[in-house]
Image 1 (cartoon, rainbow, N blue to C red):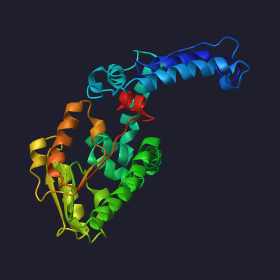
Image 2: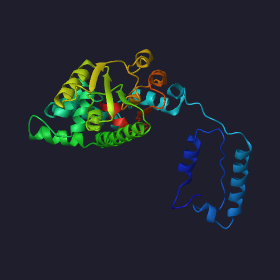
Image 3: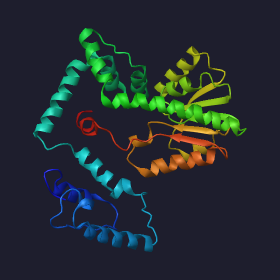
Image 4: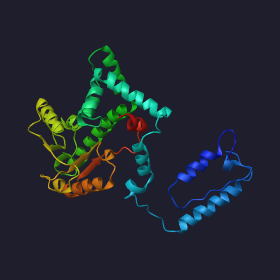
Length: 307
């Protein structure tokens, strides 16, 4: 259709971006936006019926996504973002201004200062975001910190924590109902706050192992475990979440494995495959894997351009 309600070009753009090789584009003269309500709608139904019949007559095709990190649209997007905006374009100037403002005023905000020191995707930054308590060296810094913590990305991360804890509790209940021992491992736990919050009052859990690559995260996590009086139930050790040999050798074998906020940070599928292969060997038959992904972020361009 093409009228004051809808425009043709966005529909053509959408069609061209469809990944499937099985597609057809038809322009129906005289049709408006209510394609299936037009007087000559039989023409549209005929073309639909012909296309759908051919689809059902042929064996369904399965698309191989294993190499999307190298050849797919997301890989192209990553390369474009890595190249940065056009120099001296309005977007480039805006990002330069934001970087300058962060360096100038960021030290007054505890969250921004922490992010610039340890990385905005670090376990320390995420733990600070989870606590959601604006802090700063002065009132201005606390205001900046409040704005920072209320950004849409961090609000989403806190909601992810809520959903993750619900899933963890549900998984514990499912394993217990099946008569399996509940042994938990988180292979990239950060400081471990979301796991400790979820399992603090779960007597069915017999063993909790938290792992992280960062020595700082391990030290902070061990301190949090001691503060909560959970040292008898929880261990925190340094480990590589992408090392399949390390993961395969986990003892005792976990029945619940957790991977949160990790895989989406790395551009190569091979690393993720290695991690999943190690967990597949480690998890006891009948066990459960919970992992999170982030296929889209509303602030992706800004993050790539500023941070």
